[in-house]
Structures are given as structure tokens and as C-alpha cells.
Image 1 (cartoon, one colour):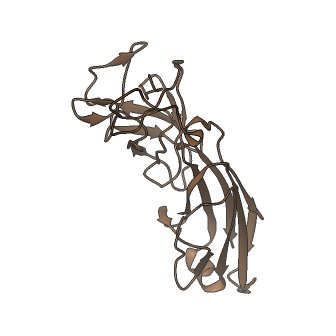
Image 2 (cartoon, rainbow, N blue to C red):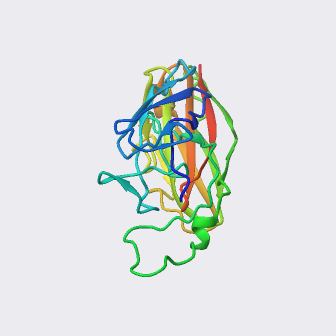
Image 3 (cartoon, rainbow, N blue to C red):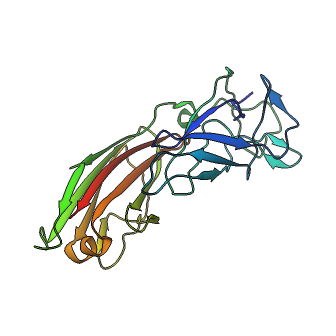
Length: 237
């Protein structure tokens, strides 16, 4: 049996806010916890007041064929995000021998898991520099680059998210944000074990963000669905 996600799991956002999942079809339980299905939702008690992660909606990556009344079962390793676009950090407590078999099911015995499905190592994401500063009086510096280095043996994709601490909104900037944010390479594709993505902010964009702190989160996702993330914080004065 795969390690299905249940309401017993510890789910948090990157800020440490604890999640409470809401099962809509609690017909299968593991250790007393209902198994969660695709489109089930949850709330997050996020302490990050600038742009809190208030909740999430679960989805399946299709890495296992298990369903309940026609709805896909969510695995503990399926990649899922908060409503603000940040990765959910999931720890499930029931132990299983994970024999995940993607749909459609084979007619004979299931094949052994592929190496990428046996990989339980989260991607490593490093932001350099992690701390940035911009002054609206001097409009200096004229541009600020941030280099994100992502490492995974079996990479799938990456997502770059801005949390605007003044407007209290989140923006997906994986493809950049013309004309003020240039991301190279853009698009979120990740095909090599090591990837370097450079984000460059220009002065006009930083001034328009407004005085305060703004967070840029880079999330890397493995083919198994495990996320890793790094962040850079821009302070505008």
C-alpha cells in the first residue's frame, strides 16, 4: 500500500503554520485518521502576518492508482501548495512498504518502482544573496540580482513566488514580471540535477513594491513530489 495522506499527518506551511485538513469522504481510515482525497481542503494557522498562508486545496500527482468512489487518493509525498503558492511540508506517521503503481494498472504483476519514485530526498534550494536592500530616495541600487541554485537527483519543476509584504498579495513570477522582474531561464522547467536560475529586479519595480519587506520563494519539486525551498528577502526603505 502506498503511504496515503490522512488527517493524522502533520501539515505546515514554510512559516510553521499548522494545517487542519477537512475530509469530504471519510470512508477509509488509517490509524483512526480519514484518508484525504483530491480536492479536499484545509486551513493553516499561519503566523506570517505580512501575507499569511490561510489554507490549501489538495491534488494528486497521479503517482498511484488508488481511488475512493472514483476520487484519487492523495499521497503523503504528492506535491501540494498553500493558497499563497508556497509548498506544504507534510509528515505522515503511519509506516508502509510503498509499492506505488501509477495508473493505468498493468494487467499482470506491477513492475518494480522506478528510481525516481524511490527517491525520498527533498531538493536543495539555495538563494544568494538571501538578504537584499533598496532605497527609494536614492533609487539605488539600479538593479538587484538573486541567484537560486537547485539540486535534485530526479528534478521535476520549479516555482518562483513573490509575497508582497505591503499589498499582502502573492504573485507567481516563474516567468518573470515584465518589465521589472527578469527570470533566466524562465518557465519552471527543470531537467538537470543542478539548475541555476537568476532573478533580476530593476529599480522601478522595487520602488513600486513600497517600503517594507518582500519575500521571494523558490520552490524545487522532485519527480516523487517532494519540495525544497529557499528564499530571499528584500527590504525597501
